[in-house]
Image (cartoon, rainbow, N blue to C red; front, side):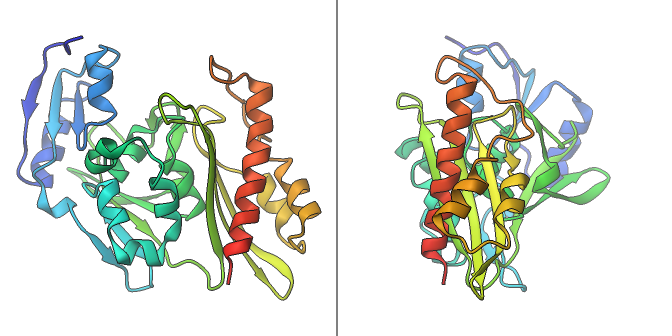
Amino acid sequence: MIPAAFEYDRPTTVAEAVDILARNPGTAKVLAGGQSLLGLMRLRLARPERLVDIGGLAELRGIRALPDGGLAIGALVTYREVLDSALATSRVPLLAMAIADIGDVQVRNRGTVAGSIAHADPASDMPAVVLALEASLVVRSGSGERVVNATSFFEGAFVTDLAEDELLTEIRIPAQPTGVGMAYRHLEQPASGYSIVGAAAVVGRTGGSITTARIGVTGVADAAYRASAVEAALIGTDGGAAAIAAAAAHAAEGVAVGSDIHADAIYRAEMARVHVRRAIEAALGAAG
């Protein structure tokens, strides 16, 4: 199909971009990589009256080291750029683990990490990853800049804490604790590549006991979430098979599990438990 008619802006600065958003509340959509938005527009499932193409904003590009040992990823950084970045893959290997299986070559070449997060598709992989990494999201508007913790950013299916006049400009990932391991495990829908269930784990052990456990889950509910019940059940244990299985049993606790043509709620909840368990096991195996 052909998208509905729309106006097109290509701002040259972030300030100009947020000004356009402020002058067109609720009718403008930001275009970065376009791998999600353009497909919806072709099907007329999305009909923005105006596209704000931020592709020319050099200030939103680049991956840089943070003074605390963390990592900052600009809003226009593509999946491919993360995979090709020695800095990103060495400091935060979880990024490459998840990104390597996202979409196809074209999606990874053109799609942006920040675009996926701002789009907040319930089956997208990156929201689970930034939750497990305790990332912060930097957003700009005409009123200035604010920093939002990923744990409070995802509010529902395609709904985030971004206001209509705000632009996501950067993802900041803090330095991870020494000795933690990371892993991503997912069950994907074969035709689309989207996750029916995805689990990101950052887990570490000190003196024989689990002291760090951060689990992000996607594909299960209408928004990605931290599996806090799993984390609470895992911390303090020896991280053995029985302890991991007992903790993973809480993977779908506290959320309304979704049901669709790909998986009903019972199957999806069981797959959440399975893939959370696998992600924890793999993360512990990778821990130093």
